[in-house]
Image 1: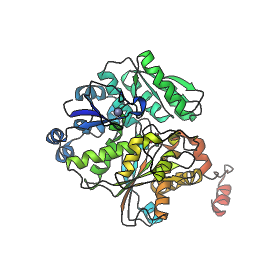
Image 2: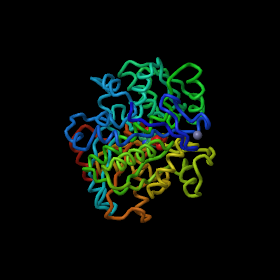
Image 3: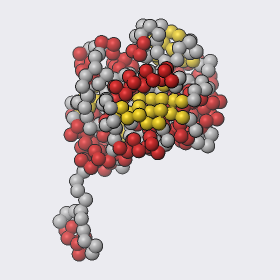
Length: 421
Ligand SMILES: *Cc1c(COP(=O)(O)O)cnc(C)c1O
Ligand SMILES: [Zn+2]
């Protein structure tokens, strides 16, 4: 891994050798999230857009020279397993949605198509490879549900043991996935933030590899692959705006990192503005952005929303998340649960993507951004659909009308159709 120069603290800027620390800056503890620093000259000699154009690999592993893993371990684990199907999700043009909003160029990146049906597979894939590289018997994570399902699914794919901490309130579908994949599931009688802290204590105590978002510096590196894909799928013409749903802030931080990598390599010529979308009941990053606070000045708040995947009272990747929006000239905005629910059928009918509430929030955010003049009609916009609607059917049912009950005869079908059904 000679392409990794250092791990750099996002608070004090101290740099560590890659084998010197496992997770966070020793001076700053769990807040001291590390950035992975790359040797772009070396990487630029190893891989080019032309090489990629010829590469038949349709997964995140096409970007191996840009990822912080041992290539041989990744290739070996991915060979003929579910791990080989993570990434390279479709980027759909959405002309009807665009027309509704008065935009000319809109795409939806459909990460509900990942193997465990959420964006989190991008990070968990990297975690599974890191755990194998380092010879850990068990991997652990705390999660609102999707990161856990992703870890459990990919661990099952390669025969790795895992222990999962999720809040008791996680949607049934996500818990069902965990149990079906054979994870040891600990339902924490508390919030996601409680589950996170418990997992942080348990990992060193029992000698487990810790995948926790933001604590593990390599998770944003998996998530950054979505930015590579968006730019490659658009012929290396970076969009003007990317709308990202934000809970802990690891996705938006990862997207920012991916874009910065591409800019440093000279493969794109500008950074898109990142629009971070939070649920109104869980919007500490919007508050911090509005008040000009730094990540380390934030304190925990009570957080609630129907969009469970973006509920975080103290976003763990807050430093990278604020930086992502500030350094790209973007904005943070809030959307209500009503706007999020309305966005579920809008996305489903407008482009054919059935999204869970957190994913629909990104589209709800775009609707707001257009209404507030933050996005202009001619701008090229990408919305990240981060998770499948099948993850939370109960919420989807709140967003849609009733089906029509008919007797098993044609006359009744005619009656319903005549009534406008
Ligand atoms: C985790 C998640 C998010 C938010 O990602 P963060 O890194 O926590 O900001 C958004 N949507 C879905 C579906 C998720 O699972
Ligand atoms: Zn530090």
